[in-house]
Length: 289
Ligand code: ADP
Ligand code: MG
Image (spheres, protein in one colour):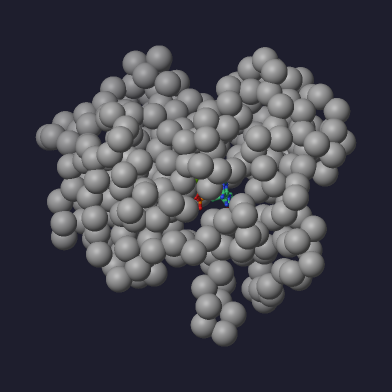
């Protein structure tokens, strides 16, 4: 879901331009849109694909976060995500043999990126789902700033980017209590211009005999990652970093996740553990409810 609020006199035009930008990037980065850069990479059958500089740049950033997270974050996860259907009304577990067959196709080190040319091994695929929304939110923010919009709030499915400052102080962005109604919050992140991204397992999951199967997968096992966290909210300047990091921190879990964010300058996080407790790490102004 996309929600954009612009505080400006010409707001209608800005809003339709923002949605056009979303569509433009969907045509470039979606795995399912036939002919998109990502679609062409995934259907190249092992041959090199030339893509737009914007696509190459985003893949480069994604590979950086793979390194940084020790391989937990991995856009070559696609052959595994294809086996899991989190949207079905009647979900079932993938066959173990299918997961075993897909595992050798996963591994970010096998992605060759040379300038704007991307080469995967045959049958490998990439999925930018854990980073693209952040990247696109940044592009909307750039567009608003270039056009003199003084204040805007962008929300691309949980990737929130603010433009400018709130008239009477800082923006307040709620951090939800996992598995509760959307309006039940742990507390509020207060921020100036920048990005607040949440990755959680409570938006897309299914249950089979009381076990929760969610959409963030462990690239080594092919199954939903076991983590001692329910959600991670990352506060950063750019949303592309926040998006990748929110997913990466979830995969790393409380201790390693906390350490990683504290080692990075200008980043902060609110990590919600299994028992629902919020832990604050790094550079963040968080007011508990
Ligand atoms: P959301 O899309 O719900 O906002 P995320 O940013 O955490 O949440 O991205 C989750 C998506 O990323 C999944 O739906 C899947 O497409 C992809 N994904 C799943 N596991 C991984 C992983 N280990 N590394 C990178 N991407 C992943
Ligand atoms: Mg993400």
